[in-house]
Amino acid sequence: MIISQQKPFADILTALDKSSSVFLVGCAKCATVCKSGGEEEVWQMQEALIAAGKSVTGSIIIDEACHMLRVSRDLRSRQQLVDDADALLVMACGAGIQSVSAATPKKTVAALDSMFLGNIRRFGQFEQKCSLCGECILTETAGICPVTACPKGLLNGPCGGMDAGHCEVDSEAECAWAEIFARMLESGTSSNLTATVPPKNYARIPKPGKLLLPK
Figure 1 (cartoon, helix red, strand yellow):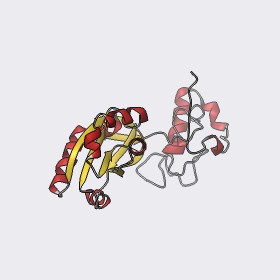
Figure 2 (cartoon, helix red, strand yellow; figure 1 turned 180 degrees about the horizontal axis):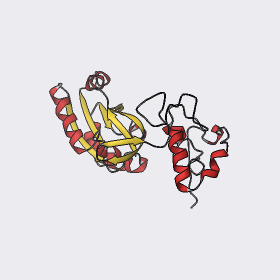
Figure 3 (cartoon, one colour; figure 1 turned 90 degrees about the vertical axis):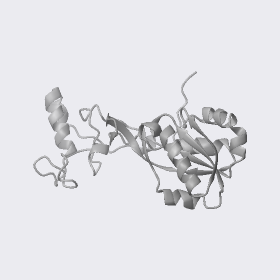
């Protein structure tokens, strides 16, 4: 899931400086789990905007704000409320914000910052495990991604700064490559210890990315 957090309210007000009326858009998926753009957060934002002198014409929580057709359809169901607003304040990740901006000519303001693709350890605790690099080497590294887990993103390690199994960048964190080696030994894949991972082929991840599934 995409981990996001709200921008400082002062920054949001600055972005809405010339907009007296606002329509709010939240997301029922990632932003709700992150407590950055769900129903509760949209209501709190509405109250804060009204207290700051803004008029809120309405709001909607879209099931998946990154789903462009769904966003377009749901906004049409609130067309008059959207038309009455000077701007749409979107409490979703960057993908959701762009779905909204593509669906309306109205000014679109981002209320959240998208942080990373995250795993959920438990409620309210999120950890980045994948960097979406487009060329997965988890088979070769015992299911631990060094591109993400190692602060230096080393494909072959550990580096010379590893000290007693700990990272030189964060002395409280275990070295990602020490963890990889330990898991290789545990899983019986220690033969991979002598293999060298070649440089990543970044040509495989052109931007913007696109994937069309066969019909």
